[in-house]
Length: 226
Image (cartoon, rainbow, N blue to C red; front, side):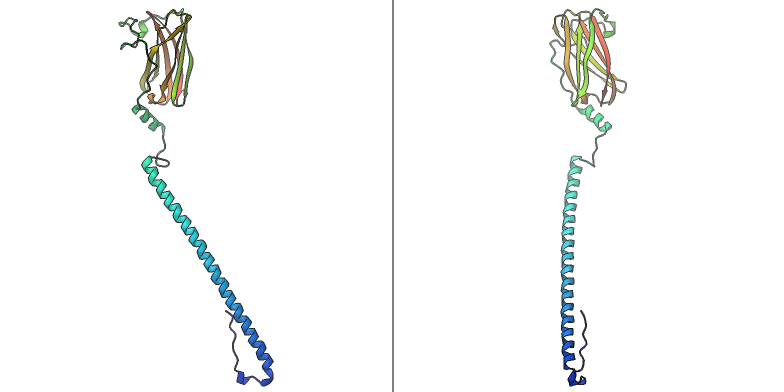
């Protein structure tokens, strides 16, 4: 605040009263200005303190939210404490129970063939009937499922469909079921296999074999399991 020195009135001549009046007015203005300056500084300081309190409150809320999320994420294995990798997917697929295959009208034996086929023969010993034509109509992976549909033409009955997925890094996945037959054509599927049955991610060989009586028709393909 501005300082205004007060002179000794006795030392001032009487004809200088107007000067003293002006001097007093000057001191009053200086005092008022100093008070106003102090008030402005005080108000600015209060506003600054208010802003600082708001920032501190927001920071405290953010810290609480982050701490709460961290605890929940750690407990539930959310990001960033758990990011599912290929290894995680493979481990999960090993522990997942497979979806059931389409309902079979005949129960296969341990050879992987229907009961009407000679059980003393394996699949490679059963002759391929070149008059029948087997093909893979659909082979894809969507929404966590591997989809397969096979088709066989020039056949005389509903045979047995055997679909085998193989990869040198994993156990084979084999599905067997009875085809539907109409007008010399048999259809195998559509069949859906849970992708979690494939514990190894990558390229898989697909073998489609169709058995009827003592003969078979085959088709091969590949699929990338992701």
